Image 1: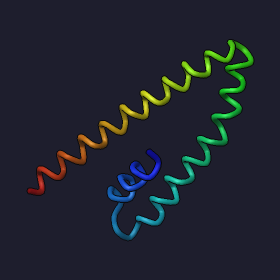
Image 2 (image 1 turned 120 degrees about the vertical axis):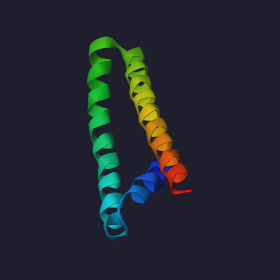
Image 3 (image 1 turned 45 degrees about the horizontal axis):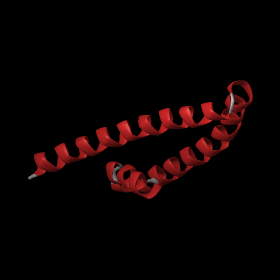
Length: 82
C-alpha cells in the first residue's frame, strides 16, 4: 500500500516539487509509525488487547476510503484529459 499511495502523491505534485512530495509522504509514514505504537499500547492498557484490533480496523477503513476517493478523482482527471 505504501508504494502505491506514494506514486499517487508524487503524480499529483508539480514536476518541480516531486522530491518534496515524496519526502513529505515518507515523513508522514515515519510519524504514523512513531505515534501508532504508543497510542495502540495505551488503548491496549486501558481497554484490552482486542480494542487494538478494532482501532486498527477503523484506521484501515479510513485509509481505504481516502485511497478510493483519490483514485476516483484521478480517474476523473484522466477522463477529462481524453
